[in-house]
Image (spheres, rainbow, N blue to C red):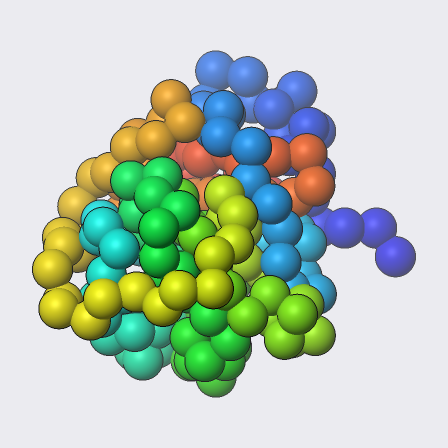
Length: 162
């Protein structure tokens, strides 16, 4: 069965509309291709706001967590991945580290991150919610559409497929 989209095809069809993230993410979870409207967080080595976001209904959105590229502490683990599934999130993008990837890889969720680290994050709820955040040459604005697959991650101000 064909995938509903491919980032390469979307780039070809909409070259003036898509922005391509230049960050090379690793993919975790059983879902390798994901898409949805963007919700954002900016945090550093602290995942209390990540938990708070994933505890709320995701309604098919993708949570983009700008962790500043830090690999010091994991911002998402198997418990938060389960929250994402249970609450209807399309996936989680982490510009930082994750952990519990052996378990996450058995779950029906798409998680993309820079890498892994076993150390859990702080839980001080320090960060910013639903504001534009940038990494990889892209500004992620709440409400934009994100598409990610094995070829990469792209963002558009509009939904690009049915």
